[in-house]
Image 1 (cartoon, rainbow, N blue to C red):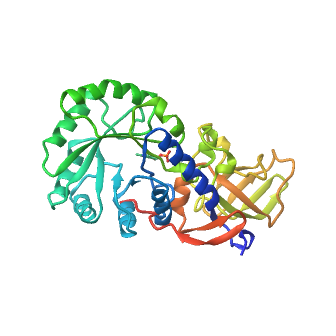
Image 2 (cartoon, helix red, strand yellow):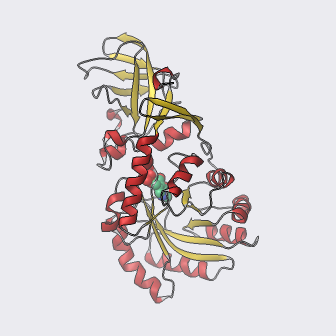
Image 3 (cartoon, protein in one colour):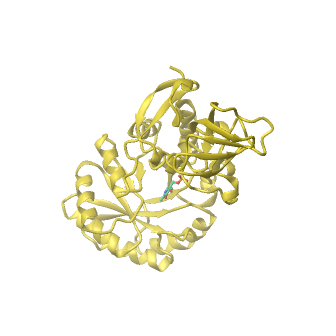
Amino acid sequence: MDLASLETPVPVVDLDIVEANLKRMQDYCDAHGLALRPHIKTHKIPALARRQLELGARGITCQKLGEAEVMADAGLDDILISYPLVGEPKAERLAALARRAKMRVSIDNPLALETVARAARHGHEIGVLVEFDSGNGRTGVTSIDGVVELARAIRATEGVRFDGLMNYPVSARSGEILRDLLPRLKAEGLEPPVISGGGTPNAFRTHEMAPVTELRVGTYIYNDRMTVGAGHARWEDCALTLHVTVISRPRPDLAIIDAGSKVFAADIMPGGPGEGHGYFPAYPGAKLHKMSEEHGMVDLSACERKPQLGERLRVVPNHVCPVSNLADRVAFARGEAFQGFTDVAARGRSQ
Ligand SMILES: Cc1ncc(COP(=O)(O)O)c(C=O)c1O
């Protein structure tokens, strides 16, 4: 069966491109002595996580407990949850995970530490990383004193282990913070065994930016329009494309495709909403400028050659992780040969 016979819209993952992307990152990490801990948020598929480990990754990263539960059910071990867990129900679920997998969690506040400590009271030690913020304005302790204080609190808490530091996205600023922070921790006898940094766009510059020991990258497995835009990848490194069909051509400069916001995520490019929601390799001037749930409106005014009614198009999404999250299953392919469907088992796990 070839790809042209699959019903659209359908996300197609080229396994040859996946393999090349995984090897490139593993080689980079090996060359620079970094432990690779891929973030599964991009693919959410246990078989791909297993392949990442086979190629040399040291463990995996999940954002939510629900993702970690799916991965543990599939037999994956050594899981970092790079997200603060807060509350008793989370502690219960973390304890259940810790019974069957080696677990680590990143925290940035005492309440999240208390949640991990409660989970550890069920009898399995859990590793804790302190997340520091290097300008992202999301989670992460924002002062060096704050990191030291939280690391001390971890040391003083029974059942948890201070495993080190976590940061996202790793940047030159992360390096500056670590230069001041590491001597402070050393003076306290709290040298971090692990310094975990993450983010695909600058991944291959990690060794120049900060003294991290571990790299958490997710998007690198598929790449997308944003990673190409950031200079991290080329169009031919984009492993996931959405295959869609032109279902209407109401005006010469307008094509309607059979995929809208149920299939494409809403992420906009750094240049703003004017850049549209995806890139059409066969029609670089085409712009997916508007979407309703089931329709995609493609402006063709900048295309010399225009797609025909009924034509199948391929689209590289702006940001691939939320696109994976919208799909129940993806089609695996090698070149034009269809290899079968695979469930996106950890999709939608928001808890
Ligand atoms: C905490 C954390 N670590 C790592 C990553 C992986 O980033 P990327 O997909 O750019 O590789 C993310 C992505 O959102 C993240 O939130």
